[in-house]
Length: 180
Image (cartoon, rainbow, N blue to C red; front, top):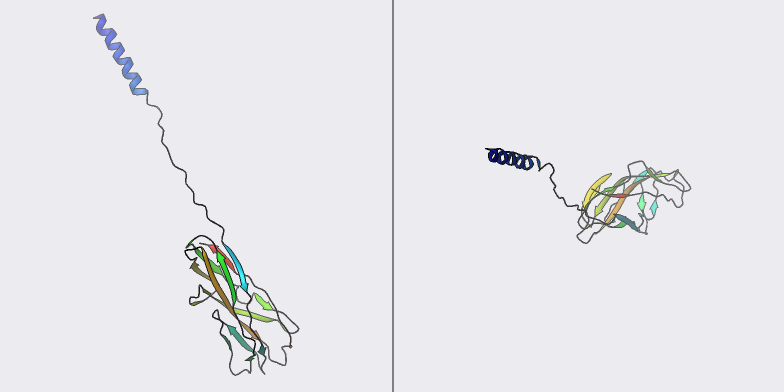
């Protein structure tokens, strides 16, 4: 009988150790990341409206991203011999990454010179030679090599020749590219 009690005591003791011995557990996880180059943009050409002759009333000249310049009709505004050209940019970043291109808002940019300021409005862009898209923000993707080009056009409004002083006018504007 003593043997049974000792045997039962050892069994209970060993069973208790087995029941309470698993109080912690361990699991493993991996840590990962992907590192990408920052997105950059570089201007390769300025926006030029070319030579413009003011008319008897105010008028507009539009340069589209493809480089075509048009003057409003009926105002006497005409284009000169120096051709207009859109602003051009090259950007680099992560291969095939989506990005947003933000153009200036209407009324935020003017060219100044010897006469009244000339406001720039209706900014448009064409990414990679594609279709023209109106701003202020558009979405596109970098090419598989991590580069992309885009061109920007706008519309300027000039005063009548009696008000718009002859001379050179300049202004600057920013475009912003951001990863999506």
